[in-house]
Image (cartoon, rainbow, N blue to C red; front, top):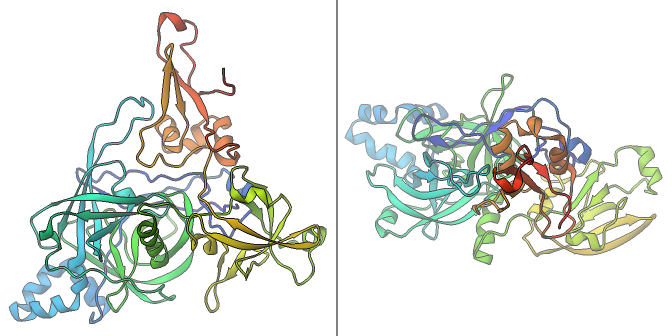
Length: 501
């Protein structure tokens, strides 16, 4: 798929407990592009690398919130404001922002694998972020907030007690995690947050959380400035997202974004940091959140967001459309490659023109109607499905229209973007350390700029190669542990294994 690379670095928000440790997010390829911009060749384009950072979002007020200025005043000086109001005014303030009591602070101890020495783990570290209580005695936060967790604790607003939490599910692609607490005391006196529909442009949003710069809850306000398919830095995927102009800082990750009626419309999870932009934050919208929750409820586990296993290109060029036998009233996108392991490989072929998905016509630029006056990449339609669902696609092949019912599945990369909590895979024989290559492995070996510093052969595999079989891995000799048996081979480092013996 096409990927016009993002021009700034998005950052995930997880506030380090000791000394604001900003850990770089987990991007996949340098091009984390919107799915509505297809040419796959562009996805591998290596230009100036955008800088990504961790972020969390501020939270919102409820229906009775008076004015945006008042909300900001409460955000930074809530305690002082309440002191000025006196006891008679405290009750009124509580009525203004009742949803804030459902926002919790998340404390996590992480122990990351050491991908360069896979038989070890790195030194543990602590971080704090935000979360909020939903129905069914559950708590939502960001996946990157509890990545490689050893222990997770939650603290409610106004409480001095930290409650031990259990991680129920982690959705790496959508950057959402689901937690619960066994202690009944934690759930007392708290009203769960309610989810609303997708907001419109210019709708007011208030973000609540526990960002860097203080220990108490923080509230910031803004408006919805854009709704589109965007790159999820942590998940290395493209899903629906909201762009807002409310301030989002490290530690806000996992905090809810409320509308002016106190209904949750999303989860703050990343922001754009670039010298040419100001106050650009991103929120996971309710359609993505509900998909994650319903997926967990249906399957008992997170199964992921399905995709169509193809690379495609736009058909905006009139000569190309004519060459492919398209009529003037026909629109669609051209299939460039089909993943051999994808279910679609049994029916789709290179140079097929996909005309529609589940009855919705696809335009030549890869977009479909979204709302009044808006269009969005057709991958949005695919992401609304669940793993194992079937969809009807209409295809133009050799000037004839065909219909196929395809089974949707998740994407398997040759070089995985995440290990999803599993320890890295390795094998040692005669001092040769064989390791499976993943994005965390590349980052461990070559740093956060691995897209520029790693060997070209590995980057080509990372950006353009497809898996030929379900169990295929890219294996390298990561290093040679010196011994008498391997004299003369000590200098082998990150050399790809191409044949089995």
